[in-house]
Length: 256
Length: 319
Ligand SMILES: Nc1ncnc2c1ncn2[C@@H]1O[C@H](COP(=O)(O)OP(=O)(O)OP(=O)(O)O)[C@@H](O)[C@H]1O
Ligand SMILES: [Mg+2]
Image 1 (cartoon, each protein chain N blue to C red):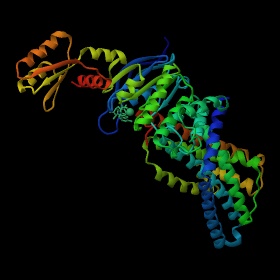
Image 2 (image 1 turned 120 degrees about the horizontal axis):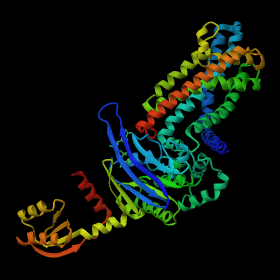
Image 3 (image 1 turned 180 degrees about the horizontal axis):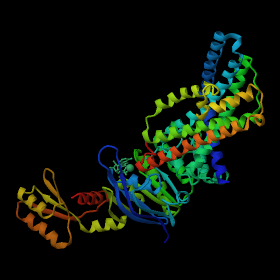
Image 4 (image 1 turned 30 degrees about the vertical axis):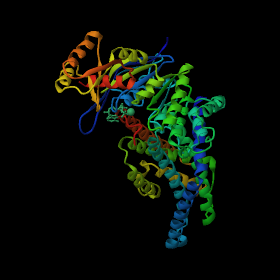
């Protein structure tokens, strides 16, 4: 019960931020949307009609990328910001444990990001005329699984930021690495499916473009995705715990 | 009385990648009883913040134990955190984009407490800290003093047994500093909380605390009730008022005999401040003064304040 109370408090705070800084949110969406249009019509002009599948792939890939960027930057930037404000130490003093605080925050932002991404997706589909299958029942767990690996990376970077402080430039580089992970086809590059995002993006594509429901996706692919995400999430969280220990030892939780 | 906080041989060494290790806290031990208000007094770098953060398990100590209400804080962090709230370094610790009211509600939730059931207390705190007018203004637009008050209110709203305050009045203008002191003092007098506060401002400690622990170079120099310290020093602090100036050899003789003695000369007078034990030492001073031209106008008991006591103790510690 108390755990839910804490989750609710974090949800409420995120909501207030989103509302109070809606200008930032909206301008962010517009920027992403413009970049999307640039790429979409760029590819279309280059390849013409025989790129039909690719064009739909771009919509899916862009959606996953947006989700990944939101998930990842939210977590790692938040860590820096909270350390700067001195609120990170307060979060660490919650009797329900920082682990639960972090998970609640991730869950809260996932919900809000979900709404934003759906909005963006509708916008993208509307302007391009590429209407994809929006089977939310199948998509929600798939997206959650796909993005979980990214949250792992977010935790890793957050941990690095706690100890080494100046890691912003690495943050930005990673955003482009995500593009590669999403865009490179795992069929042609088999090792890709061992990296985060790749496998999940492929499965999401099958649901959205091919109209295949979750229950009819190959079981071994789904299990592979579960394993992959659990691995990256677990690894990231473990690394975070390690850096957190170092930060506690060096007295760095309140410094930035 | 109930023991609520026990610090046993707390030691913290900051290991540095370059250069020497820093021994910030060196085997500090002290206890705090329920409803006590204890001041942690010490100059910059004495180890106050390190001690407080160790109690709040934000820093991992190198050695020692911390017991909070019978709970081993280093082993059972969550349970000990139920009993602790802390404000570290003044006006940080709050969300600058949230209003005072939203901040208070958030910290209630962070503790896992129901906002609905705490509503009355939230309003009470807004009233007490005079935040009513600004309760719907984002915290970043408040003055530093207001932010600092809000940070303390956010710690209080968790309704924990123990309140840790690191330099609560640092950087505040006099008016707000007094207001804060008044609030803390009243809270202490009502016996609502157990407070451990650090400061290097002795006036703050003398004003609010019943007991003071003076630390320097990571070690405890004294741990006593404020009134005892004042009494102790009242008994031995003397001020000699002298017409004219001391001869050089007189001053040297005095300082040789009493190294901590201080001489201050104005145009027509000389003042000698000294800690003297018993009348024999007073006579010794008089004996030395008799040798020259100087005439003793008066010998007075000095009213000491904590600041002087602190300076003497810390000076003595350094030698
Ligand atoms: N994170 C850290 N890493 C390395 N050394 C540190 C760290 N924090 C504090 N120190 C050192 O430890 C010693 C004690 O510092 P601490 O901050 O506990 O003192 P303080 O009494 O709070 O001082 P102040 O009045 O300046 O706040 C100082 O020498 C300080 O330089
Ligand atoms: Mg300090």
